[in-house]
Length: 168
Image 1 (cartoon, rainbow, N blue to C red):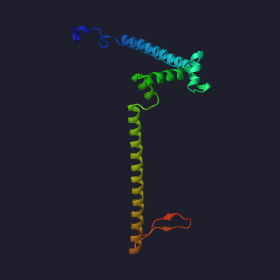
Image 2: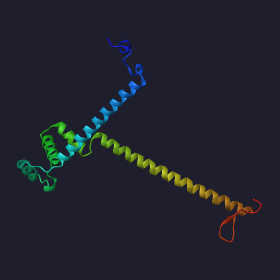
Image 3: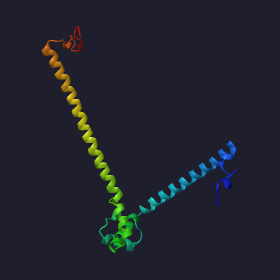
Image 4: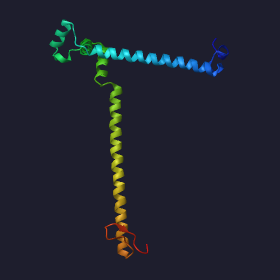
């Protein structure tokens, strides 16, 4: 049975710092190589999917379906094949098409969340603007009240700037 006793002396915590660094270095190199290979495969798949269809029969089918000449790629052929399978009742093909056009349940949920976030932002923005307006109105009302009572009010100097009222 596997337990901590079986691991004694074999974990990284029982290795010297130089051994730990060497193991980590090798792991980093392997990780980088795996990422590079994955990227190369993705780029190759994109390149092949965007190539024009060479098969005459497939090109003819795409023409019959009304696919424009410049769009007759292998990627379009895959979508076309999925559409045909979905029409025959293949639920997985229908799901693939739904997800491809962005109508999956997750996509709808993200759109609704975005819509709610935008509405909340607008609501909060309007609330902030109302607070600013009410603050300005409060300052104006205080100024007018002070003026009515005959208290000191700000005055302008020769260059148009504000100066403090005397005795304030």
